[in-house]
Image 1 (cartoon, rainbow, N blue to C red):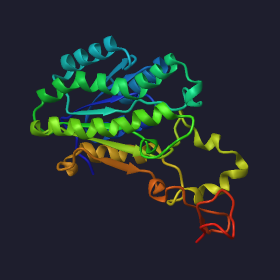
Image 2 (image 1 turned 90 degrees about the horizontal axis):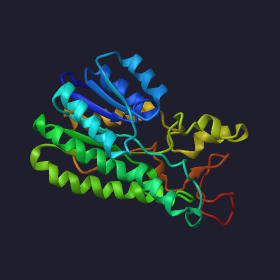
Image 3 (image 1 turned 90 degrees about the vertical axis):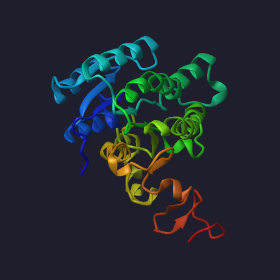
Length: 275
C-alpha cells in the first residue's frame, strides 16, 4: 500500500512496541532504516531482524551527545533523512500524584516525553532539508494529551505541548515542503504497557465495552497511521493529529455496561445518564 523505496527513515525507540512495528513496516515498504534504541539487547535484536542494511545505534535520545552522534552517523551512511518518527515516551516510569514528584523526577519526565523530541527534531531538520521537499516528521503523542489523566500530570502536559510544537513547526517547515504531524494513541498493548497482563482476568470480559471499537490498540495499528502520515497519500496533511484510539476520545468517558447500556457513570443508576 505504501512505497518508501529510496527513502531514509529514522525511528527513535525502534527496538520494541510501536517503534519496532513501525520500523518493520517501513522496511517492508522498502525504506532504509536508522534506529536508536536505549536497550542494548533490543538494539541487537532489531539489528538481526532488519539486517546489516539498517543503521541501529544503541543510545539515549535524552543525551544530546548521543543525538549528535546519531545525526552524524545518518549523514555518513545515507547522506540525509526523509522521515523522522519521534516514538520515544513513557508514562509508567513515574506514575504518582504531582505533589509527590521531586524536581528531579519532573525533569526526567520532561526529558523523556518532550525535551528529547525537541532535541532529536532540531538535530534532524538539517538532514531532512538535504533531501529536499517531501520530508516528514511524525511524533507519537497520546490520547492523554487531549484529556486528563490522574497521577500522570507531567506526562499529559508534555503530550499536550507536543500538539503545539507540531502545529507551529508545521508552519515553519511548510515552505520547505517538510510536513509535521502526530498520532495520538489510546492504550496500546506493548512490552511497556502489557494490557493483557495489566487488566485482571475477572475484568477482561468488559474490554469489548470499554472502547467503542471493542479492543485496545496494537503496535500494527499505530504503525499503519505513522506510515500513512509519512507517505505521499498524506502529501497535503500537516500540523494535525491523527487519533488512533478506537473511538475512545470521542466517547469521552462513555462506555457500555454489562447490560450493553451506554453510561457515563461508574455504577449504573436509574437517575443517571444512561442510554
